[in-house]
Structure formats: C-alpha cells, structure tokens
Length: 237
Length: 257
Image 1 (cartoon, helix red, strand yellow):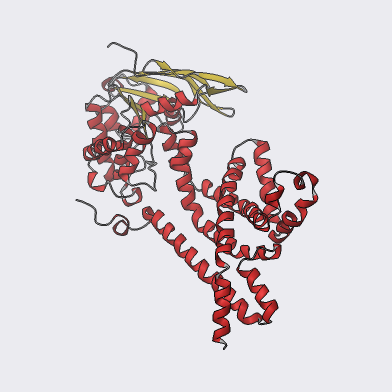
Image 2 (spheres, each protein chain N blue to C red; image 1 turned 135 degrees about the horizontal axis):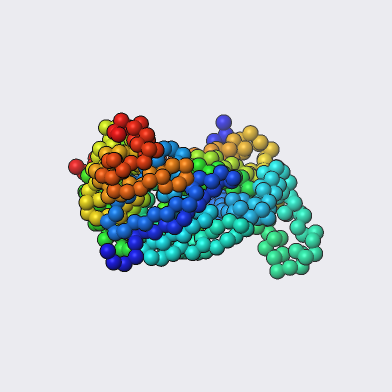
C-alpha cells in the first residue's frame, strides 16, 4: 500500500470538502424552503395550486437528477430571455446551476415527506388547538409544524443523506467538489482504486456525522415517546 | 339574574348530507348553570355541543356567548362563520373538554396548560406558569407537571385537559362525554374535579352518561332524542315523577329509574 500517495490524495480531496459542504447545505436549505412552499400549495385545497404542486412533485421525482442538472446547466443558456436577463451572470455559474437543480429536486421529495408528516398529526390534537382559539399560522407554528416535523424526521434524514451523495453529480457540470477533484486526480495518475476509495471514505465520514446529528435531534424531539424515567429525569414529588 | 345569559343557542339545526342530526335545538345557560345533556348515542348531543364552539358548523340557528352573536354568512348555500377572528375569540372563551382528552402529546402537562394563555391570549409566561401550577394543584396532578401525556393514566390526562381549559379563564365550559373513555375506577377522580368546579359557580354544559352527576350536581337536565329536546327540567323533576316516558325508558337502561 502506498501510504504516501494515499495521504497526499486524502489531503487534496479534503481541500474540496468545503465545496461539497457548501453545495450540500445550500441545496438542503433552499430545497427545504421550496418544499414548504410546495407542500403548502399541495394541501391548500385550491385545485390550481395543488395541481401545480402535484405536477411539480411528479416531474422532479420522476426524472433523473442528472438530466435535470444538465438541462439547467446546458439548457437554460439557449433561451435568449434567460441569456440576456439579469439572471445570466448567476445562472452561468456551475455552482449556482448545481445548487439550483439539487434544490429543485430535493424539494419534490421533501414536500412529499412533509406532507406525510402533516397527515400523521392526530386530528384530535388539531381540534384541541382550534377549541382553544388557534387558527391559521399560529396553529401551524405551534401544533401542526412541530408534530409533523417529528413524524417526518426519520424519512427526511434519509433524504438529507441522499442529498449529500447527490452532490457528487455536480462534478459533471464542472463544480470542483470531492468527486470532481477525485476524477481529475485519476486522470492524472490513473490510480482509480485508491483515489475513489479515499473519496468514498470522505462521504462516509460526512454522512456519519450528519446521521449522528440527526439522530441526536430525533432523540431530543421524542422525549414524549420514551419511558418517563428517561424522559424527564426524576419527577419532583 | 341580570345581564345576558352566558350561553344562548337558538334553533340549531345540523345536517350531514341529507341526514338531519339536529332538528332545531334551543338552550340557555345562565351564570353558574350546570346543564347535563343526556341521550342515547346518536341522539345528537355531542354534535350539538360541538356546534356551540363551532367545531361543527350548524346548518341553521343562532349562537350567543355572553350576549355576543356569532356572525354567520351563507357561502355556496352553506352557513359559514363570517370572521375567523371572532370564532377564535369565542373559542378562547369557551373551555372544551373532549372524550379522549386530546392533549398535545409532544408537550409536557405544564406546557399543555400554558399553551393557550401564552400563545393565544399572549400573556406573560411566568404569570401563566404560576397559574398553571395552581390549577394543576387543584386538579391534583401538580407532581406530574413535567411528565408527558402518554405517561399519565386516563383520569390524570382528563384532569390535565380540564386544567388546560381552565387556564383560559373561560366564561363557560363544554364537556363532551368526559368520562366515557375512562376505566370505571378512574371516573370518580374526574367527576370530583367537575363537581368542585360546579360548586365554584362555573357555567357548565356536560354531555354525559353519568346519571349520578346529572342527578346530583347539575341544576338542569336536558334529554335529547333523535335530534330534538325530548324533555328538560330540574333533576328532581326529571328523575322524579315528571319524567317523560322516553326519558324514563332511557334511564331504565342505567338501572336508576
């Protein structure tokens, strides 16, 4: 085993981790926001809005992310409206294109996950909130969202991990994140095995950390489902 | 007695599709009244209670809380409240206790009790906590204030739900079969709390199957049958010689006639 080569490769790849993390965090953030909008449209009861949301979810869940990314990166520039608009300086950047397509895609999945969470909120608890005088945003903020989020968290954790892995696709639209840098190293050294193993190890470590954080969050938010002793500590008598 | 009645409901009708559940029910509750609503299941008593705080929207009829009429409009042939704001306000003035407690499972008992005062009434948190602890003391579960609903017995949960409703300082309380989901040995602790409330002068509307409560605690008994008020009156009359044949038959099922 060529320890020197491996450590050198690792060092080079680690320098690309910030780019991967930036891709990941921006797309999870904007994708999450967009998902909230889509799920709001989906459950709004307005046939036009919910129809749009259904269509959106179908398109972005039903087609390959790679093709979506290519369409954004190579496709958008073909439209004069976009090419000559104020948006072009942004949309011409590979990073922006990658974040945009990752966010658009995850929003479709996340919206469905959030919707499942909403449906799991017990009607009784919603009724109790209404009976006390809550409605509209207050009801969403205090009861619907917190309960729905708890129900959605396990499935949403999976989606977040998938997003971390999907950032690798950004290498194909020339973003120099971990996988992109790995491919460049391979084309220079022809040592596929070592370089990709190093890259895989980096993703494993990142996902391990993310899953640990999410598991902690889930633990903290599920006190009410655990045995009393573990939940509240010794109860004052 | 002076002033408007705490609660006045006039000619409430409610249909689900073509099935008319309530066929014109009127009821008035004055300050301190404790009214027991009795009736076989399907007689519409729970639906009637839920119409009062608009968890169900009556197809027809008028509702006044402390003299304030709930404004309704016709929308697409259906009755609808004119203002959600007014509905929220009216609901915040009427404490509701449900058959299956309906506590918010992700909040502790104390958080359940202060939720309304803090977030609906927007009162200072510290004040609400102090009041909530006093209320929980009163219903006998202050030692459980940091526990979650799932860790309490049914009777304790229902007492917590009563404390949650009381924390809003309601003008009247609506009880929808508060002891029906409880094991028999837990019914007593909830009834004791309700009796204490009645003795303090709380205006209460209670849908119940507890004949002893109807007879001994309430000052008026309303017997509903097939969507109408079959008979109503003071408990001593209702349970005495003045009972209608239908009511006599109904209480016969409870072995108390």
